[in-house]
Length: 132
Image (cartoon, rainbow, N blue to C red; front, side, top):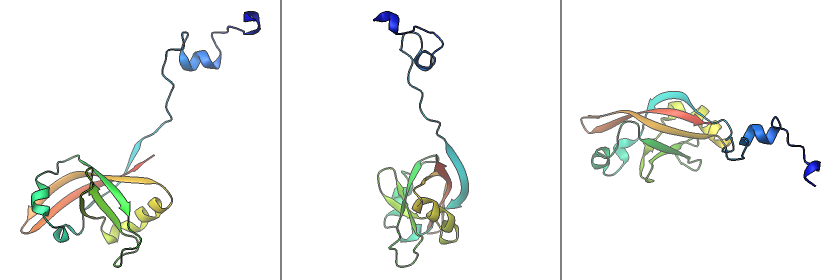
């Protein structure tokens, strides 16, 4: 039976898994594509944002969620921390393309690029990425 299986070191399985079959299976190519810089809108309406700001760090990952039932903006995108705490929205002036991408099934997320307290306003600058 062993003479029926050709032992060719140049076959596809050998190339993918090595001679002994102990190389990891390659993963599909994926990357994060930078799209845009903006800020988090609506932080003045988030209860306890001053206390929350102390826990937000430059580079923190932020999750985006569509909120099509939002009574003020049908293209609304909620921004939450990795712990699920809402910190605001993608600004209305910036969300038309991003909401369409998300509605088409694309995964968008943000990263904090800068933060500062201006009087009673916590300004959080973010970079928006597409995970592909």
